[in-house]
Length: 374
Image 1 (cartoon, rainbow, N blue to C red):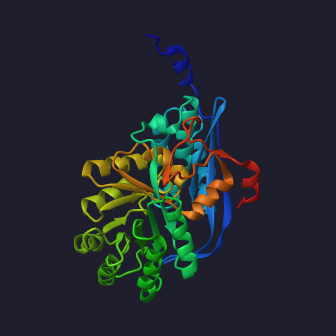
Image 2: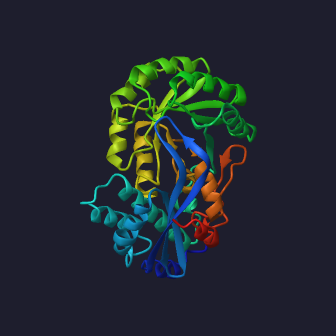
Image 3: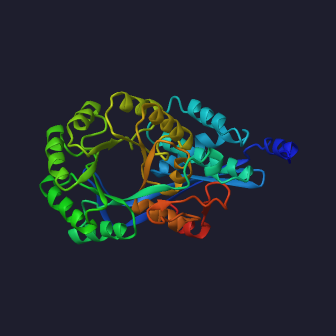
C-alpha cells in the first residue's frame, strides 16, 4: 500500500505568509432597494489576497471602505510572517490585537476577509478544494432566492420570485415591514407568482413591534408562509422567543445575521429564540468562527442557515451537519459573478463546489475589479 510522501508534506508546513493585499470595490445596484428598515443604492466588497510560497489565497467581506483600511493598517502586519497553514493561530492573533478596538462591526468583518483568504491559501498550498479540506458531509447546499425588496413594484416582485421558482429553486424570500398595511397584499402577489409548491419566506428586518408581528404571523400563515425572519429586532431575544412560541404551526422564526462573535449566537440559542439560526461568515470573523457557530447549532439540534455571500459560504456549509440552506441574494450574486472567476451557479436549486479547483475556487478578475475600485 503506497504511503504518504512525508517529506513533501513537511516541506509545505514551513511557509510563512509573505504579504497581505486588500482592495475595496463598489457596485451600484440595478435600482433603488430597500427593506423594512433600510434603503441602499450600492454594495461595497472588501477583497483580501494573502501570499505564501507560490500560492495566493482570496477572501472577502461586504462592508465600508473603512474595513479595508483597518486590514491594511492593523491586521496585515499581524499575520505576515506567521505560518500559512496555522490559520487558527493567525485568527487568534488578530482577535487579540483588536482588543481595544471592539470586536463587533467592521473589526469582525475585517478579520473575516483575512481569515477567508488564509483558509483559501491553506487549501491551495495543500492542493485541496477548501470543501474537502474542511471535511464534506454533503456534495452541495440548497439555496433560497432572496430579494423581493419593499421598493419593488408588484410586477418586479412577481417577476423575480417567479423566475427563481421557474429555475427549480425550492424556496424564495421577500422583504416586508416598510408599509405594514400593504404587506399581506404583497405576500399574496408573491404566492400567486410562485405557486403552491415553492416555500415562501418573509423578512421584516426587525420592523415590527411584538404585537404587530404576532398579528401579521397569523395572516401570513393563511398564505402558507413557512419562515418569518426578524419579525422583531434581533436584539429583542425575549420578543423573538415570544414569536417562536406563539407563531402558527409550520412557521419558523429565524434570526442571527447580525452576529459578530460566538457569545452572540450562544445567547440567542440559550434563549431558545429561533427555530433556525442564521450566521454570516463575512460578519462573524470568517469561516473559523462560522464553523464554531455550526458546532453550537449541532449541540442544540438547531438548524443553521448561511446569510448571503453564497460564494463565500459554499465550502464551509458543505462541512456542516445541521445546515438548512444558503441565502442566494441578488446583490451579492451579481457582485461575485462580476468580480470573480469560478463562481458556482445553482443546479436545480443546489450549489455545488468545484472539486477540480483547489481552495474556494475563486480568482479575482483584476480588470473588472479595477473598474469598481472604491
